[in-house]
Length: 241
Ligand code: SF4
Ligand code: SF4
Ligand code: FES
Image 1 (cartoon, rainbow, N blue to C red):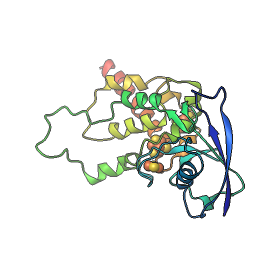
Image 2: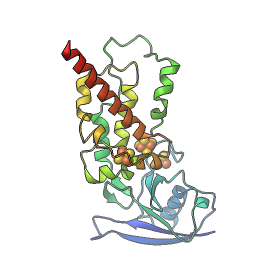
Image 3: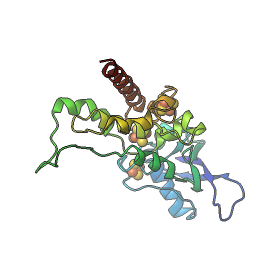
């Protein structure tokens, strides 16, 4: 079946302005956008640049805007789209390095800031840090994040404030705050008790719509807000005694 792709192109070494390039090609409707892009690159235009790795919605590297929606190119099948014009753009809220490749630096910076690993107070156990199934159930919805940045690209607050940590980092922090094995001190949460942290979110749910792994970052952000309020009340009560 004939498909028309309109793909965002920009090579900072050659182009003054970005532009859209059209490619018309026969594809099987059952293939993914990523497979179509690989075919275009291999058979039509070897200069077309994009990121991918696993091809199975696991690595998070093929995030891009497909007909206006952030998604994983390896997850979206051609048969779910109209063939007369499929518009592919790089993720929004990032600097473009080349074509569909963006500079993920700000996303990783935010992620590093929340220190996404267990902060324990005891010596490491001989084997693993155990957690009950019940406690695991509470954090499980956030464990599925593959760091594709689709939510970050969809977030209107990120587009206005480059210091806002963004939905993925905040949701990941909530995953650790809810983990009974994590004992990070309250002082650690100061960074998110700000407009660039948990209070910056406008609860517009764009991140929930955009997430290809059904993580609900906004639920994590709400959870962090509850935690901050509870901690504040506890501190006030302690101060009064
Ligand atoms: S709900 Fe909050 S974090 Fe999610 S997209 Fe909206 S403003 Fe961004
Ligand atoms: S929360 Fe969802 S959209 Fe955001 S980075 Fe993780 S998997 Fe991607
Ligand atoms: S190629 Fe890994 S998520 Fe798409």
